Image (cartoon, rainbow, N blue to C red; front, side, top):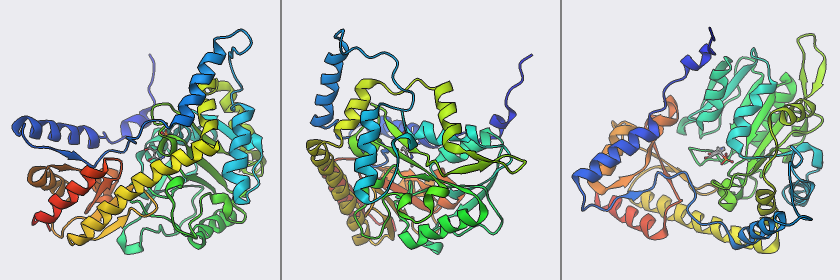
Amino acid sequence: MSYINENFLELQDSYLFSTIAKKVAKFTEENPDKKIIKLGIGDVTKPIVPACLEAMHKAVNEIGTAEGFKGYGPEQGYDFLRKAIVENDYKQRGIEIEEDEIFVSDGAKCDCGNIVDIFAKDNKVAITDPVYPVYLDTNIMSGREITYLPVTAENNFKPELPKEKVDMIYLCFPNNPTGTVLEKEELKKWVDYARENKSIILYDSAYEAFITEENIPHSIYEIEGAKEVAIEFKSYSKTAGFTGVRCAYVVIPKQLKGYTKAGKEVSLNQLWNRRTCTKFNGVSYIVQRAAEATYSPEGKKQIEENIKFYLENAKIIKQGLEEAGFTVYGGVNSPYIWLKVPEGMTSWEFFDRLLEEVNIVGTPGSGFGPHGEGYFRLTAFGTKENSIEAMNRIKRTNIR
Ligand code: PLP
C-alpha cells in the first residue's frame, strides 16, 4: 500500500480562475453580440522583445554546431548569466552579491514552492492575506503551522509584525494582488524582526521592474543586514515577457544560516545548492542567453518601453476608477489595481454585476484569501484601447 501525504487533503480547492472562466463562457454563450473586456489577466501580452529573440535565434544556431553544442549545463546557471545578474541587478544598485549566491531557475513559482524543501516542518510561517497562493499552498502541503498577516486598507496594506515568534516570513512587494509597496523604513522593520528572531524572510520581488517611486526598495538587500536573513526571488516573466519562455533566479547569500535542532548553524546557500544539484538540471542554454540579453542596452530599452506601456494602462484604469468614484490602491508601482467594491457588495457580486452590466472581467479579491473580500483586482496587461473603453463603460454605470 502506498500512503499519501495527507497534508494535500488540507488544501482548499482553487475554484477562482475556473469559476471565472465558467461564468464568462456562460455569459458569452447567452450574449454572443457583447464585447467582453478582460482585465483579469495575470499574464503579460506584449511579445518577447527583439533583443531576446535575437539572442535565442543565435543560441539555437550555435547548439546546432559541433563547437557550439551544449549538453547539460551547470545546475545553478551559466556563468555569463550569473555575472550579468550580479552586475546589473545588484552592483549597479550598490549591492554586493556574489555569483555563487545566484541560482538560475525555470520560474519564481517553482522557486517559491521548492524552497520549503530545505526548511523543517515545524517552522512557524507568516503569510500575508490576501496573497499569491503558492506560498500558502506549498506550506500546507508540507504541514507547517501558518500565521496570517492581514493586509487591508485598515493597515494601509502594510502587514503588522506578528505578535508571536515566527520562523519564516513571506513578503511580496510590489504585491500581487494588491499592487501596493513597502517603503524602505517599513521593510527595515521586517529585516530587524528577522535578525532579532533568527527568522528567514522569503522576499518575492517578481514585480520589481514596475517600481516608479523613490524610496521603494528594488531589492531587500538595500536594507542593512538583509543578507543575514533574506532569500530573494526574481523573475523575467513580467519584465521581459518570459511567462512562457521560463526563467527566474533566487538569491541565497552565503551569510544566511539555518539551524539544526541542536542549535548548529548551517549555510542555506549550501543546502539549496545540494538540493538544486540533486533535483534540477538547469535552465536551457537558449533561454539563459535570452535572459542575458535583457541586460543589453537594446534589451533594457525595449523592456522599459513594455513596462511603460503597462504602467500607462495602470494609470488609465486607476484614474478612470477614481473618476467613477471608487477607492483604488496599487497601479503606481505595479500592473495590479486593487479597488474597494461598493459597500454591501461581496467581491463575487461585484464580479457578476461588472460582467453582466458592462461586460468587464476582473478577479474577485476573496479568491486571494479571506481578507481580500470586499476588494477586486484589475490588471494593466490588456490593450490601451480596452483599458480606456473599460473605464468609459464603468463611468456610465451606476454600480457604486
Ligand atoms: N511571484 C508572484 C508574486 C507572481 O504573481 C507570479 C506570477 O504571477 C510569480 C511569482 C511567478 O513567476 P514565474 O513566472 O517566474 O514562475
